[in-house]
Amino acid sequence: MIIGYDIIVVGGGPGGAMAARTCAEKGLKVLLLEKEQVPRYKACGGAVSWKALRIIGSIDEVQPKYTCYGVRAYSPTMRQSSYKFKEAVLTLVFRSSFDNYLLKQAQAKGAVINSGEKVISVTINDELVHVVTTKGEYTAKIIIGADGVNSTVARETGLRKKWEPEGYGICIETEIELSPGDAEKCVLDKELIEAYFLKSRGYGWVFPKGNTMSIGIGLWKPNTIKPAKAFDDFISFLSRERGIDLAAHLTKKFIHRVPVGGINRQTYGKKVLLVGDAAGFVDPFLGEGIYYAVASGVAAGETAAEAIYNDIDISSYQNKCNALFDNDLHMAFKFGNIFHEYIEKIFYLFDKDPELFRMYLLTGKGVYGYREYIKRFSLRIHITLLKIISSAVRI
Image 1: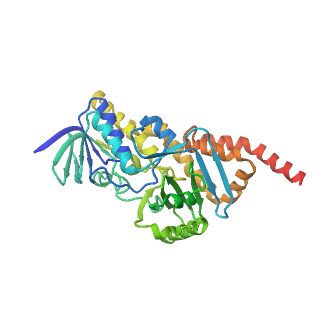
Image 2: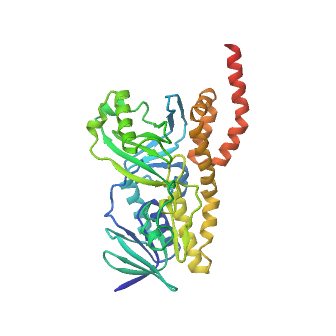
């Protein structure tokens, strides 16, 4: 038997859950298909930014979770910049509990959640979308692809067969559980995340989650080092620095692709919308994806409802995304190119004028975007240079 819905959402991550929740809130009949049984492990640092929480709302029910107030960052030569705010910048979560919470929210609004059901094929005709899974067949008026970097929906509907040669990066990450004593030694401040920029185009990170450390590296193309070697080198470096054999605690590591945002791509087609990683909506500098998944998920849900209720063309989705963040992703792409080319000089400026670093953290938090940061940086640099000159004169 073929079951009919208004909307089928494929993928149970933050983007899919928010799309399903939005559609259900608007009175649509929604089915969400997730190939894994939930709750399920998801390889991710689990950093949920303030700007993402503004959309999601309270996540007090997600446990455990850890509050982060700032960042300690290092250049390739270990020049350091750090800043801690009085208010939270982001919340660190385990994706299994976080994603499950968002799915339950969507379910509470009326969405049907089918986990452990993988999509095999998607066919679109003049009237409906026809979806075949490992457990059944369904139809819908619109399908939303929130199924990640290897999106079946994008491939089946012809929106994207493969990524551009330099349109994605590689992440390798792990979660290492330590004793309370070793956890204290592993991080300098449990209220700060740590970022270590590499000589190659990318960075390593340490996100403290109680006694568990989320550790990983991300590399964008073009890079000059193999990801596996970069990860092993990073684990060895941290082990030497902290006096802990982290490799001895490492049980699994996960390798996956991450899209580079800020590249013009088709994110919608006939009766289909792509969100989050499936659409390529990822910060091309830091690799943040949760906010963009959440924001595009809501935008896709709103667009789908408008299309069904008011017969509005779903091409308006692209305009929504441009207004929300996509224009800023293009600016982030340019910023990343400049940052990596002049990274030591920029860290030198951060050192001489910490306000430049603080302003960037406000960008990551979502207080303003990359375009605004570059504008503020340009206005501030005159003060920074005066500080440097004054310091040199005193010497």
